[in-house]
Image (cartoon, rainbow, N blue to C red):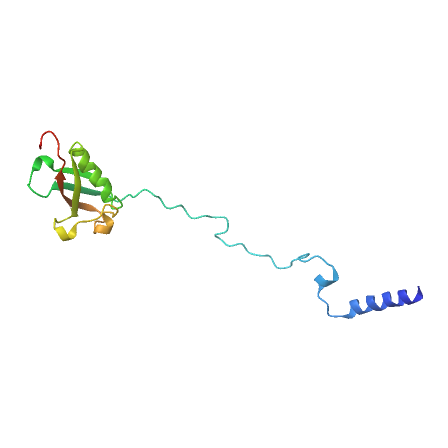
Length: 146
């Protein structure tokens, strides 16, 4: 027993005089803090979420490319994020569903400038204001066309 108590005293003496960090000696980290930690002015504040609604406005004048017919011309209020497929659906609706295979061009009708249905007006260079949408189609065979 005498030997164990001497070892215990030696260990206690060594721990007291060594350069072992406080944490290793079993004391809790962060006990007393003399310097106060400053909080960021942005802590707890979140940015406003971006609106998914496109506020920009476009007035598209939709025209049949040929033959020129003012009766088939109409205006469509939309935004630059409007897809060509939406415009195609509105054109088909105006014709009572009797047309298909539409070719659509933005601001000028030319066979090399036909745009795909998956594009938006913005991808076609329309960012706001007014634009022209030209279309052409193949009529469906029916009782009137037979």
